[in-house]
Structure formats: structure tokens, C-alpha cells
Amino acid sequence: MWLLRLVIIATAWMLSGTVAAADLSAKMLAKDTALISLDGKQRMLRAGQTSPEGVTLISSSRTGAEVEYDGVQYSLTLSSRIATSFVQAESIEVRLNQSSGGHYRSSGMINGQSVKFLVDTGATSVAMGVGHAERLGLDYKNGDQGVVTTANGQTHAYAVWLRSVAVGGITLSNVQAVVIANFGSQDILLGNSFLSNVDMSTDNGVLVLRVAQ
Image 1 (cartoon, rainbow, N blue to C red):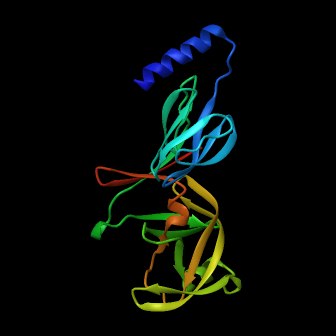
Image 2 (cartoon, one colour):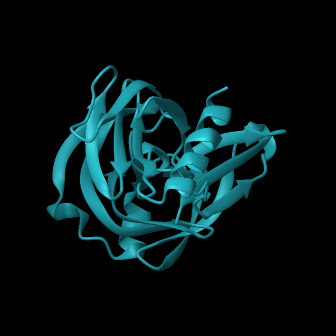
Image 3 (cartoon, rainbow, N blue to C red):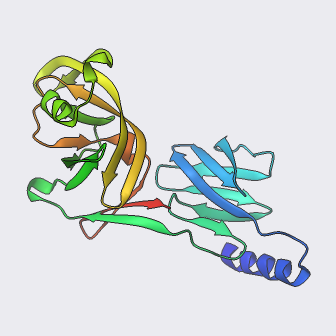
């Protein structure tokens, strides 16, 4: 029904020629919170809150948001935008097949250097061992020190920032990571400091990562 209403409104705008097209998109999604952009002006909204431009966030999760603008309700994801001209934003998509054990692995790059990733939605951030960090030339010892709990118990760790993290055609800048002593994985864990910034879904067992250009 709201699609029909949108078509009617868009048609009326085109006939009148007096109202400019509005560009509505989601830039960040979380539970009950979303960063909504209207014609390039971004507002962080909580569920039930209305921006000065008249956009109301109805509900939000990591996969999408329901908003209302000018009396019409829209469904937004990170890979699309709504406009009066109905233009779909171009997006970059990466598809990962399941490996043995039901895991998702991918080659990628950190700071322009090749690495192997293991997707881990339970990891707060990108995580790696000291050997990985030294091979990448990271000055991790000057990072904030702390203690983390792993399968092998508690161990020392260092928080660092990565200039870039790339998986397929998706590249993110300034990604938080942690360097862990006694790290038990040969692969670097691709955690939520990366994954929370992309739209993630599954398609017949294939993990799909998508981000708007």
C-alpha cells in the first residue's frame, strides 16, 4: 500500500514541478537507533524520534529501519536509498561460501597487505595474533593494553586502528582491531568493527556482505 502511495505522491510532484526530489537513506543501523540521511543531512535518531527535517524513525535493527517521511512509510537498508525518482543506490556485494565446519572464510587485505579472514560475528572487533601484527608492520605495542578472555583463558591484548580493511570489493577505513597474545587461530577474525558497517545476510547458505557505494 505504501508503495502505491509513494507512486501517487511522486506522480503529483512530477506534474506540479514545484517540489524537489528528496533523497532518503540509512547510513548506520543498530537496535532502536539509526543514522538517517535526508538530502545529505544526517541525523542520529532513536525509535519514535523525529528529525528537524520531519523524518520519524519507527523502528530499527542491524538489518533495516522503518521510517516515515511526509506521511509515507519507507523501509531502508544500508544498501539502498529511497528517492522520489525511485533510484536504487549502487552497492558492492561480496558472497562467501561456507567452508568445512560451517565457517565462512575469505581472503582480504589489511593496510594493503594480503591476509586470510575467518568471519566471526561473536568477535567485538577484528582480532589477530602477534605474528599477524608483526607481519603487517603494526606498531601494536603502543596501543592501549588490556586483558581479554579466549578459549585458552585470559591473555594480554593491544587495541589498534587499521587504516583499511578490504574483503572483495568492500573496503572500510579506520577499523578498530585487537592484537592478542597466544592467539589460537591461523586466520584473522573478521569481527563486528567491520561487520557492523555492512549489510549482512545469507542466501541458500551463502553469506552475502553488501555496502552502498
